Image (spheres, rainbow, N blue to C red):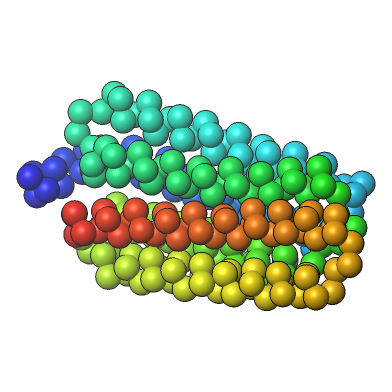
Amino acid sequence: MNSFLSAFTPKEPKFFPILKEMSTVMISASDIMIEFLQNYHHETASDYYLRIKEQEKKGDRLSDKVFDELNSTFITPFDREDIHNLANKLDDVTDIINSCAKKIVLYNPKLIPKSAVELALVLNRCAKTISNAVDELQILKKSSKVIKVYCTDLRDLEHEADDLYERFLIELFENEKDAIEVIKLKEIMSELEKSTDVAEHVGKIIQTIIVKYA
């Protein structure tokens, strides 16, 4: 059955450009987040949030487009459920970046810790790794080994993010005496770390596709 479907894959390439664009949106949102955290100031926070929000809206529109195409396409390159899950999780990463930016604006922390920038940089590497993996999906049979490496990289990056978050918590509870600031920073960092968890989940969905079709 898989070989039968693969014969039709070149005739239905429209999902790949949309998924690629979704990964590009994710990279853009993470780029802005890095800039936001590096240059944090209450007066400009809303501007950065609006820029990220615009990327989030783009991601939503692209996600809707994937679902519309699934409803109107007879032969899909992969299982509809896999395409749906992949698009959904790509969108989730951008959504969580947006949620983090929103919390920064609402909570208005006094300072952004250096570890937040470090975590955002890990997230950005996750986004670029996902984009690289998505690039290879159209030639899955030829690129399965390369894609598996990208998925392993996502797992390693998520572990790196976990370690950063744990060190941040230790330092936060040791050094920050303002209980309100502790709550604010913990919420912001938790959201940022969550985005790397979802990025790793994207890798797991891609691995599922490899098992079925490579």
